[in-house]
Amino acid sequence: MAKTVLVVDDQPGIRMLLEEVIKSEGFNVLQAVTGEEALSVVREKHPDLMLLDYKLPVKDGIEVIEDLEKENIHIASVLMSGLAEDELKDAHQHESVLEVVAKPFNIQEMKDIIVNLLK
Image 1: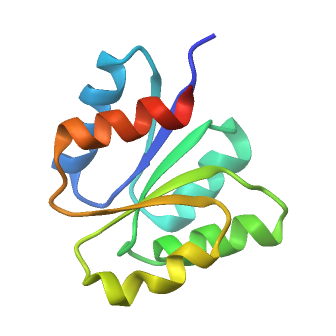
Image 2: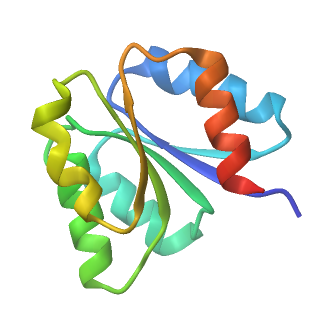
């Protein structure tokens, strides 16, 4: 059975680009626009990997990770952000966050990260 990736970003172009890349590797894709929507999708669908934007409406990416970890839900996550690296230093303290990727990202590097994490 194909693994599933949840893409969480409020920018439609990023979601569409990542969906195309993920599907080209044979994985299923779910999408969410807000942090709250991401929480619902994770609880209901149990994806294998989450690509999560740091800056989201309502709840940011770190709040999503913290809420899931409080519920003892640990999903492998890649945090994406346009923020400076020093503003993201707390991201690595969460065991669910396996990678932090700067935006704009290199699409080949992102593809490699996704494939390696889902092996």
